[in-house]
Length: 315
Ligand SMILES: [Zn+2]
Image 1: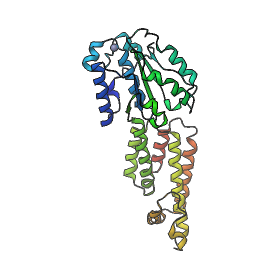
Image 2 (image 1 turned 60 degrees about the vertical axis):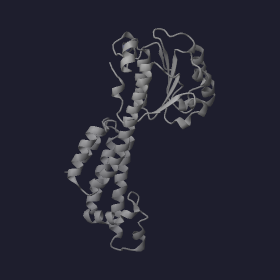
Image 3 (image 1 turned 45 degrees about the horizontal axis):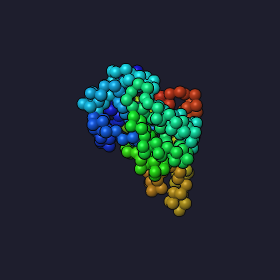
Image 4 (image 1 turned 90 degrees about the horizontal axis):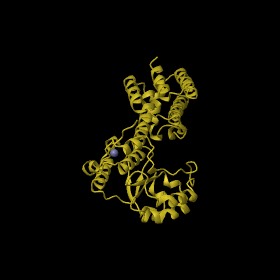
């Protein structure tokens, strides 16, 4: 069972500031009728779940002092098990664009004024509002503006520019930094550097990458790793072509327009690598990449695939 609280949210200056503001609201019991949490899936949703749990927690005294859910009352226990009847998560029809239809919104409106079952509050979590049809969003406007005193809407959205301005103006908006997207960003960086370090054959760096990958790429996506292998293949292709043309040093090669992978200004770099790599070595490495790439289709553990590929480079 997850006993989550606000301290579990990914720590950035922005997120900590948001936690502080929301805790102050909870301490003073001044809760707006509608919140928008904007950001990538992940900490944004964690934030919403923790806030919902806090809103329905029975221990009013604890909330006034700490701005957090007590974590031990019957409401908290139900929230942690995702079975609290006053935390309502309307389902949409799938998760694509325009998949949240007006009939689902009407269901919300029809039940909105029914008193909560067990708590003082009723919390509606509207996920990915960017998928709600404009008709649906319009239908919800009045409820967002004047919800019954016990109701609170917690809306998540990837980008608030994707929802109606009139919806935005009726809610308090926070942007949440997600750990997932920051790992994604850093992993893209890693992949770029990784390619140059593989090519320049820097074993110290490679073992460092292995450590980094085992630590930070727990959620490495297959598409990212496939992309990494393809980029590496493109780089090798550039090196091979450079090897073929280098003896001629003609104008065609100088403009380096054939280069897929490298920055066109990095042609000197490619030439250096072409001197370092024999044709046989290029083919062997290409074969290896091909094998690991194909293995990705059978290998469930993507991270392990990448780590063993890196280890194979030493041999
Ligand atoms: Zn509680």
